[in-house]
Structure formats: C-alpha cells, structure tokens
Image (cartoon, rainbow, N blue to C red; front, side, top):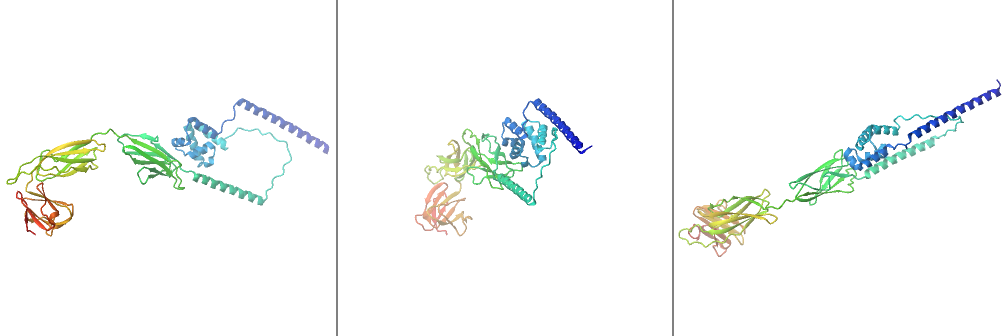
Length: 470
C-alpha cells in the first residue's frame, strides 16, 4: 500500500467517526427536548426562596420566628439568603433547616435534600457529553512566579478586608430588646397585685435595664446564653410605667428603641377607715391624768383624740369645788405602717368622754368614744419649764427623786416632768418665775414672781407653801 493510499484511508476513517459523533449529538438533543417538554413547568424555586416564601405565607417576621424556634434571627436570615458562611457549621445548619422547615410547614427531608443538592453534595441527573471534533490544542496560559505571588497577595488582602468588614458590620449592629411577658405594652392586673415578673429576649449576654420613674438607678440583669431574661418589679396602685432597654457589653451599644411598658393596678372603691380602741376601756378609772390611747385602724393615715368634761368626781374635805376645767387641746398622731396608733393624753380630775377619730387620705373618717374617770390618789405633780432653762431638785415623800439626783438637774425650756408620791412632793427651782406646776390635774401656774431660787411643798388637800429646803 502506497503512501497516498494510506492517507486516503485515514481521511475516510476520520469522516466516519465525525458522522457517528453527529448522530450521537442529535439523539442527545432529541432526548433532552423530550424531557423538557414532558415537565411542562418552570425550574423549581431555590431553597432560600422557598424558605422566605413559606415564612411570608405564615405571616411572621424574623424576630417572631426567632422567639418561636429559639434560632437566632441572624441565622434564619442567612438561611433565607443562602449565605451559609454565616452559619456555625454543617451539623448546626442541618439542625436549623430541619427545625425551620417543621416550623414553616415544609417537608424537612425534602428541604435537606435540596440543600445538599444546591451545595453540590447530592447526586445529579446524568448528562450526555457529545464528543467534540479533534482540534489543535490551545496554547496554555503561562503564569510567572511574580504574577502568581501578586495574585496570592491580592487574594489574602480580599479575605482580610472581607473579615474585617464582616466584624465591623456585626459590631455596629445594636442589640434587640423584646418583652414577651406581658404580651402587650399596656396591661391591667388584679387590684391586689404588688409585684410583676417581666420576661423577654435580647442578644445573649446583653445587659437589660428597667428604668422606673422616681427611682434613681435602673434594675439591671444579664441575659443568659440563649438571650432570655427576667426582672421582678414592684407595683403600686394606679399607673406603673417602665422603660426596658438592652446594652451590648462588648460595644456599649444600646437598643435603638427602648420598650415602653405600662402596668395598671386598679384602685379599689374607697371605703371608710376601720377603727379599734385597745385602751382605755369604756368606764375605766385612772388615779392620774396621764392616759395613753392605743388601738389599730385600716385605710387611715392619722388618728385624732379629743375630750369633753362630763362632771366632777367629788371635792376633798376642806376645799371648795373647782370650776369645770377647760377641755385639753386635741392630740393627733400618724398611723404606723402596721395600722397601730398611740396618742398620749392628759386629763384633770373628773369624768370625761374621749372621742377617737381615724381619717383616711380621701377624707372619710370613723369615730369611737370612751368614757373614763380621773380620780387622783396621792400626789401627782407635773413640772413644766417655760421661757428659759432652770435647775431643779425634787423630794418625793422626803426622799430625793433618783431621776433628778442629789445635785439637782438643769431642765431646758419646753421640757415637762411628772412626779408622784403618797403624801408630799417638794420642788426647789433655780428660777421660780419660769417654773409652772399642775397638781392632781389642776393647773397652778408659776408660784413665784421673780427669777430667784425657791422651794415649794405640795401636800394636798393643803395649799402649796414655800419652804427653805435646799
């Protein structure tokens, strides 16, 4: 076989191979067209599009989905964007996709299969490859070491800039603040409520601050690893206002808009104060005029005690009947936090009616009365210093009073002292004109006209007399 014959033979074989390849290519094209016409539908939506559409159909936003699924909103947003680099890893991503699919009403197995397929992990339909006509090979691209080094440096710069940009965006975003309990911004609770537990979510580790009008410092707590937080607040009757915000401890950024919350505690219908008098008992008799009025009340802020004279109890032999005394001034005391009250009251000898009135902040009052008798026994002497300070010394039944002492004692202006004895009380005062006496409930005034020292003896029923006891 000649060289020309060999060349003709090779040319014929090349033409035969080309014809076979053209036939194969046409068959593949016909098969592909058949599959396309058989489907009759557009290409299926991508996985991010399916997730976004399902959430919009459900009618919830990312923060509601975060609260319901316990998956952070930024991870859900990354799934809906298809930005899987924002997710912590494949294992977590599959768990997120399964839970999110169940929440959105999608088939979790189908969602995971599509995710693998779009990532290139799943199997794909076989594709027929049509052999190409043999052509002369193209000349390859030759990269010099200098160009390769420049490309590598540029790649490193792009990666670093991208990382820094991502961190800046992440750190520039303020934390969110969500209050889940109460569910609404304005809520009314039972009128007996005195406290409430606020609950909500924010960024993990963020500092939650609850500001209360009239309180200098806010109440602060730290959210746990899942972003959950709780705060106990006190309630008063009426309108209780709170402002809730969150601060990122790393960046110091606060939530863009604090959450304003109002909790109303209804004010019950006003009722008249309740009043109970523990002492004195009705009809009680006292041997001196110092009476302590005690009791309890409810829904009252103060208690007032007043007295009315009902008659004398008798006149000692050898003395004239004293005129009806003037009622002492009313005494008012503030009710303690536990509802108790104590009102000291001084009466002269005779029969009296005590009136005790409890008044609330709304003006309503409740009153009770007690009848008492004051019949002095022995010597009861009240010494008052008015208009300056005075030194005094006191003997009771001839014995120095231990509270004053043998050296006497200086009593400041406005002070009142009470002394009792069986038969006699003797008082020496450094300034007689500013020393006032009340004997067995009867006011005697100051017995001396000058500011000189004087000593006075009280031994009823005899009248007081001056002595020289020092």
